[in-house]
Image (tube, rainbow, N blue to C red):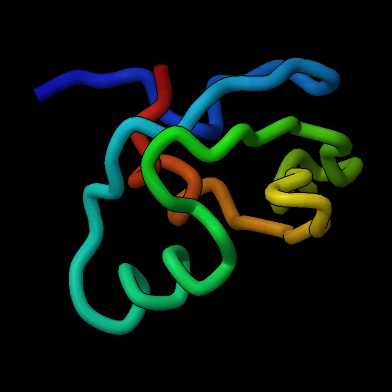
Length: 75
C-alpha cells in the first residue's frame, strides 16, 4: 500500500495527519507528541545530512527520523 508520508513534505510546507501506520510504543509516542488525526504539521528544518527533520506540531517543535516520519500518512 502506497500513501503520502510526513517525510514527503518539503521544508516550509504543511500537511494534515490522516493516519499512523505504527504499532506498540512508537504508536503511543507519536500520539503523545500530538500526531493525531487532522493535526497540522509543518516541516521547519532539515539537518545538513537530511535526517532528522524538525516539524512543528501543535506549537511544539519535534525532530523525527525519516524511518519514523514514513509511518505517518498525511493528506
